[in-house]
Amino acid sequence: MQARSAKLPNPNLLPNPLQVRSATQPPASLAAMQTARPTAHTQDRATRYAEPPAKTDGGGLQVSELSASVNAADIARMQAGVRAGLQQAENFQHAMTQQTPAASTWQAMTRASLGNGVSGGSSNSNSNAGDYAPNSLMAIMLKDPALSTFAELVKKAQLDFDLGSADSNFTVFCPTSTAISTKLASEGRTITDLYSSPHLVQIVKDHVVVGMAELTDGRYLQTWGGAHFMVRRQRGLNKIADAPIQALHMLALNGAKPCNGVVHAVGQMLGTFTVC
Image (cartoon, rainbow, N blue to C red):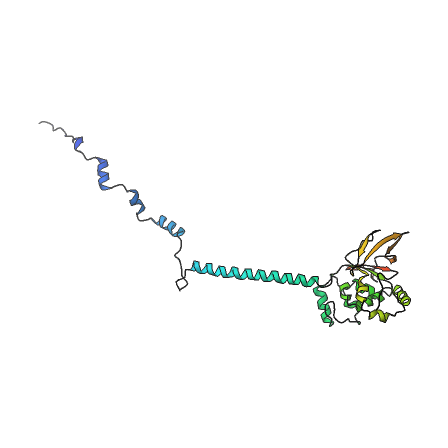
């Protein structure tokens, strides 16, 4: 019995594995990959980065357009508000320049509470040191008999709340009560004449310097009233316009320094003394 030999297949007749694969599982083309159904991962990314659909306000206007119009209106209102604020600031600055250098809200409120206007209301001759800031120039002068006569002149001139405000800063060359009485006697006038003088405001301002005045020999000081006086130092004595400065840096009766400037006691009245 002959053994049957195994017959091997003809390799040329076997199907090409690559051809079989290409026939059963064709490779995806680039277009097919782009149009293929996205997986859950790609769907999540697409949802995450996709722009939301445009919403409308119910009248066909997209919300983005509505927001733009609202923002433009808000900007217009803000610009108008800024312009109005700048105009108010300019008006306020102009009004402040028309008032005295020490004008402040506190002064206006205090004057109003006493029935006075700002720099021009009726004077309250009954006011005392307690009506002004503690240890202010006005309070110090009213409490000191040697300076109180000039303090009364300041009140009659309606400048008392300027010198009595803690927000102000002045140097006062205060003529002593004796110096004022001597000057009035030499002119044949009384204190009542001085109270009613149309030049009283000028007389008072000629004794006041706005800010801190430096007493340097040969230095000219300009007063609140516009006068110019030279400071001199002779034989150890300070003078202003030939008037001796009898006491420098007057203190309050409690020994405290003034809170709004300096007051010096002088032995003569300064400037041109014109009553009528």
